[in-house]
Amino acid sequence: MALGEELGKRLRPGDVVALFGDLGAGKTTLTKGIATGMGLPSDVHSPTFTLIHEHPGPVPLYHVDLYRLSTEEEVERIGIDDYIYGNGVTVIEWADRMRSLLPTDRLDIDIRFEAKRDPTAESETIRELTFETGSPRMQSVVEEIIKYAAPCD
Image 1 (cartoon, rainbow, N blue to C red):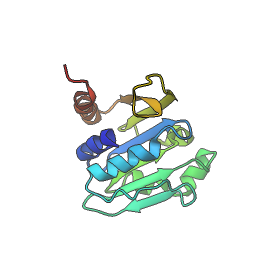
Image 2: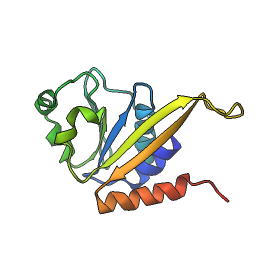
Image 3: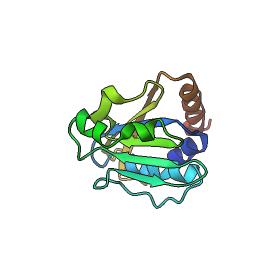
Image 4: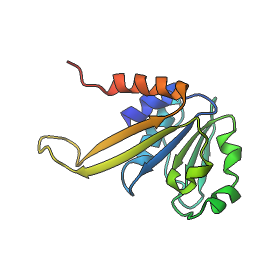
């Protein structure tokens, strides 16, 4: 949540965040944090059955969940371009379902989790997030996020 909030503070209209990871990895939780960071209510939940939730605000958040779709043709039919090239921030869960349709200027976040390794840790799982982008603007966002997430010396 906290990392998503920091990311949300830095996102701008037209930004696309593509989320990858297994079921239960934390894609929706990260999106809740993004909404909070954007100043939107954090009542975000996965739009698995509706496919897209629009969260209005000064900068709208378009939360897309492609879990129930299997082909890029199905993704095209839901009008995904209207969101990706719209005036808001688009966060796409299960972005692997539309890999060739994704814009080149985007931020990819791969979330992996494994069983708890540290018995003193509060969380049940340890998550590893990998950020990848070819966008200079998103690269600067990633650098700011890395500074935020880096442990203090």
